[in-house]
Length: 75
Length: 391
Image (cartoon, rainbow over all chains, first blue to last red; front, side, top):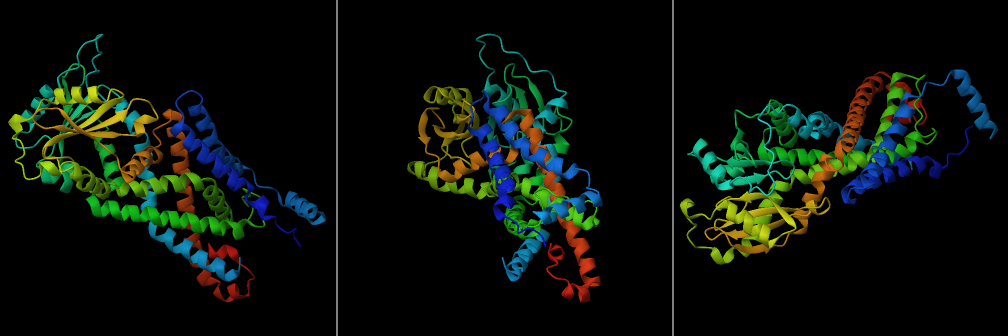
């Protein structure tokens, strides 16, 4: 009885992070000094930060899960 | 996606991963110190400090360094001189013979010199660098596992399997995370579920980086045959008029200093990085074969090669660079991560560690699955989609 998953929503993050990675890889390669290097560092760090945040996020308590399930169900 | 399609992709993911995982783990682990090889070398360099150049002082004579190197190993040949563009250092290479350049490249001896003072800083076996042995070991494991070309081609193939595993993994990411929020890690469920979620999360986040580094790594493993092709076809065509002529005797060779000076005059925007001696299989029997880098960051990726007449030291021709050699050149920094300062190297290391976790968790998921799948086969048929057991 879950809401129908939206494939666009499912792929938003993966596509955004892959695009950021590519931008970061190319920025330092083609950029001639200046702000290109820091821009590259930031673009490439973001996917890592996102991964770390999700990996280290504390587990939701069963109660919270239940509440969320109910909320989803209502939606 | 039908259940059958998912099963097929799961099969592809399982086998491409299983075959390459242990080698990829080795590559990721040995690659980690190699990312920082510059920093490690500098930290463990206990040779004399580099001399500082006085204003307008002429650089030390390369010919004198070559003569010193020849005296170290009179039974070897001098195959080339490397002028480090990053620090005032010159390396002279001395393989046992010309054939050994291709067949036993790691038997090549070398001596390093201070580019400013011309003083020897070290040589094979007595390098100023204490970390050199460790880094050499990491490099050999990483490049060819001590098996030369067969090892390189094998690891290149493992790289391609890794790419196939990434593609199939992305396809599976859809059905496996369909009902989950992005990045959800179900920590209150079984350890296997938790690690499946972590595998999916880190796998999808490192997707672009791992694809680029995997592909450029595989391309690098093919570089030896590609360079041989370049020398045989492109350079071979240019030096065809000299074919049949007697190669000049070592005593008649033009001075290396003259060669470098003439190339620098012909290409003022480029800096000479490597001078390959006449007779080197990666060059010409009748010429010095000179590699140059652009001086700017962007152009330093775009090398130019120059043929210099062996006896006169005059520039003979500036060679066009075929696309596949350009591809290798551009792929190098994208594999090494050494083109954006220390922060980029740290980012490279973090992505590398994340990839190790993806590989390790993938292995764990497979090991756990084989046990639970055998134990629970009767029930598995009844269990509805049971996607997780496919991983």
